[in-house]
Amino acid sequence: MRNTSRLVAAVLVTLLVLPLREVAAQTASSPTVSNPDLFEQSLQAAQEVVTQYGIYDNPAELARINRIAYELAQQSDYQQFPYSFTLIEMPVPNAFTLPGGQIFVTRGLLDIGLDDDMLASVLGHEIGHMVHEHYKKMQRRATLMNVLSNLLVVGVMLDSRNRQPTNPNIPYDPRVGVDYGTDRVQGAAAASLVLSELLLRSYSRENEDEADAEGQRLSALAGYDPKGAQRMWEAMNKKTPQLREYGYMQTHPFGEERQRYAAARKETWKIQPRQSADEYRIRTQALLASWKGKGKHKPEQKAPDHRGEHGLELHKGPEAMPYLDLACLATWPQGKIADGIRLSALHRQRDAELAKPVLSRDYGAVIRKYRDELSAVRVLDPKSELAPALQAEIADLDAKRKELYPKAVQILGGGIYETSFLVSFVSNFPDVKETPEVGLALGDAYSRLGNQTEGVSRYLAAWQSAPDSPQGKRARMGLRNLAPNLKELSALQQLATQERDPEIRKIAGDRLGREVKTYEDVVNGAEYLRRYPDGPYAKDVLERLNILADNLYAEVILYQGMGDPVRAVERINKILTNAPFSPAAGKLRDRAVLTEAKAG
Image 1 (cartoon, rainbow, N blue to C red):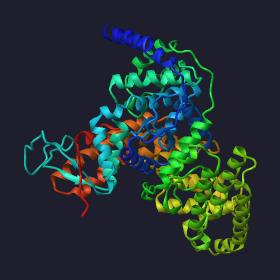
Image 2 (cartoon, helix red, strand yellow):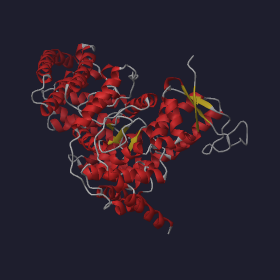
Image 3 (cartoon, one colour):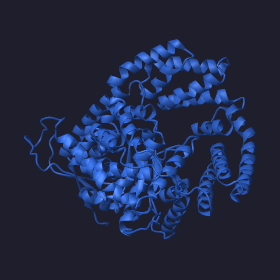
Image 4 (cartoon, one colour):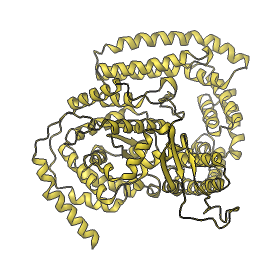
């Protein structure tokens, strides 16, 4: 009965209040920065997000999201911050907003297959959190933003003030644990803890309902069907059960209720003609670029190794693209500002490659990125002045690549080389006669190094490229020898789905069925879920991952009690990096006490 009353109330609010707002003329005012300090803190948080999780390299989806999102944003009467929309490499279905208008959509959410109307409801919902300034109603999140603004010297205390040890020397139960005080963690562990709290702490039911209604309203004003919200929640609620523990359902709860509310509201608004947001996007880009030009935002270039579709390191080392550059380029991908960002990023990657030893230079990856950018520029503006410059630089790089081939073949024949040489050889010369030999050598190298997943991938590539050659036959034998002893779930999944050898497929499939219930490393499970979020064993892998994370949490308590913060921090990092949605990660966030440490 209470749910029915809330449903009626929600419908009355939308019928009586929101149509009145719709009457006002929807002119696209220019975005501003109403709170520079908060905006700068939020930019730092955004930089940490892309550093921690990586960019999802999918230009077509990025373009679709920004087209829809800015059509929605220009209909909003809230322009206190410039909106920006970014794709990140997270397998979990999710979308989230930082207080300065930075909105993120994960690969996992796009993998569900949302059409434009459904995606508009998600993006409108996130804009709705900004419109209603929900971040102001979450004091813990505001504290986190303040701490994040000084992340290099941040301290995070893990506190358990309400429990007393039963024995001062021996923990009575390592799974429950006993805390003998607090320990401060810093650096990567602190960043992970702050980010996971920012991203995962959900809003109240009232906040979510307000954001849903605003999302549907903006969708209709921008020319999208508000029924998309109902269909989006239907898709979410039908999705595999792990969504409730591993994604959108955790950060955006009450799915069944919200599906009903969306259905009740869907006829409230009349769909308006769609309007181009080009001018609004250009103004937004100009504001972001001007902020970048002030020199305030200088992110530290540090990141895990996240690679795009062609192996390009998207945000690591000197070729990394800072968040504000990414935002400017996505906001409006053509014109002088965009061309300058593209060229600078390409030059960073090119110069970083040229700084390597000659035989380790990956000209192939650089040339592919140049060609991708050239294709994008030609589509956006056939008369672009940047295109001839890119063509000239491509020609120069390709000449250097061809000059390297005879020397690379000579080194290959000598048999003395590093793995990096083999990787660059395959990238530089993918179609030469030596490719099967190099692929086999890479499979051997990765197998020796203990990287089973990459070893299997290279053996499979060598086998499939020339199955009847001596190298192809040796690669197949390598897979036969590996399969019975593999422990990496992703490697086993690759072999369990290949079609060339039924015997290898059966061995790998049987072993995978056992390993998903008994594997011992959270990294193993996290990598499987990253590669195969909808894989046949995703649910089993997730259940085991949560158990392992809980075991690590018990070790955190144990090492804190023993006065060993170094080992405690190592385990905190493993939990937050590999199982951020686990109950163990939730317990870590609940126990965190954030303090700003003073430099020096």
